[in-house]
Amino acid sequence: MLTNVASPEISLVRLQGEFNASNAAALQTQLTSVVQSSIPSTVLVDMENVNFLDSAGLMALVSAMSLAHRLNRRFSLCGVSPSIRIIFEITQLDRVFELFETRAEFEAVLN
Image (cartoon, rainbow, N blue to C red; front, side, top):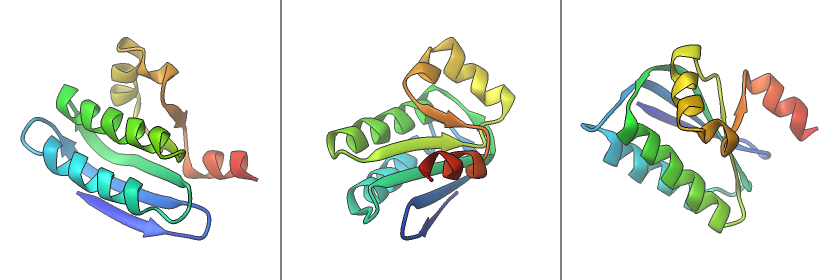
C-alpha cells in the first residue's frame, strides 16, 4: 500500500493499489506520520501504481498536503495516471497540488 523511501533531499512515498473509504483512514495516518517525521522538508508521493482513488482517498491526500503546508514542508505528487488526474481536474485540486508527470520531472525542478 505505502512504501516510504528517504533520501537526503526528499521523502519518497510510493502508493500502490486502490484508495477508497475502506482504507483512506490508514492512508491518512501513514501520510501524516511521513509528513511529521520527514527530515527533508520535501515529501513526494509517487502514484504511478495507484489504479483507483475515490473521494475518501483524495481527502487523505488533501489532509496530508495541508499538514505539510502548516509545517512548511513541500508536498508534491507524481505519476498520476490520466484516469486519476481527471479527479484532480474536476475538483480543481490540480490547482492546489503540485503535480508532476514523473519523479525525474520533479527532481529536475529541485535542481
